[in-house]
Image (spheres, helix red, strand yellow):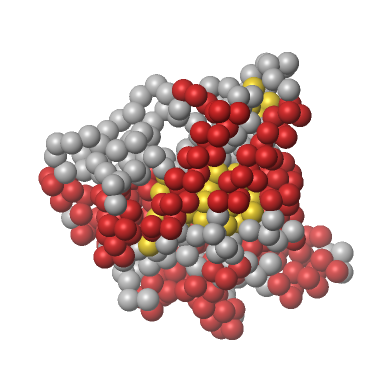
Length: 392
Ligand code: PSV
Ligand code: MN
């Protein structure tokens, strides 16, 4: 499609406002349960992870925040870490708690039958809130591995009651300008029954907590064939879509680069965002990546993911909404589908190059990053020490 001038101007303005948050853990080593492959130059501490994240922002111009995971990003002085982020041109975003790597959580964390274990898991969130205060972060993000593997292993309903009570205590720890965002995932590590398996369960708990509790939608956390954009619509209608964790899945929770497996799905999701005018930062939806780069270079992997989300957004902004509504109301099934697909099939690369140049950036972020020599530099500089991974 040739892009009409007013659509182009509107799209460019909206794209200039878009921001995408990066996960600190994407810059550390990760792998499968079979093997973790190290890469020369991988960060050894949270400071180096932030330096790498800042590279993604430097070349894309739309990734100004880095999400931390505690205790993976444990440091002595969070003020110093926030200052390092600011010096590097980025800010600290969400603080993710970790309820999945402690022996005490074998049978659950916030849902554990033993009140002492639940108290420990709640206290971990008090620590995370302190990190929020020290770094200026406004969002506490929770994902629970809690669940059971066998029917009868624990009482499904009691676990929900314990969860509701634990969440209330965590919510009470927050400052007035803090938000709690609650992620769901249909299975893994629990296989029979997960305590927050779906958006409905997360939403119910958020509604019980209060206005500042919202749902996190991780695109990899659904059964194959799930219509994710429908969930986006419902959560936006309820005013409870807090954040995305973008990534791609082929089989389960693969955590591959966003837009790699199904760029059309990403477009459909972003269309619902645009449709609800939820793109701008004031909408309260945090567009985050939650990914692992097991075999590809990490900084380029993040750049690719950011630009894939950006491209899907650009296409969503090109949908001729008037023509679409007219076709929908006229019962013109194929006409409506044409309008939708026309936007999807548009090559937005020239538009994005124009956007970047207007922001003082190189038109091709990947090429510019590669030409900078940063990867070679860190591979030479970062010798010795322990490369960061999924551990404190
Ligand atoms: C769980 O699978 C999850 O999606 C949560 O967001 C965790 O915090 C994250 O992965 C770690 O990558
Ligand atoms: Mn996630």
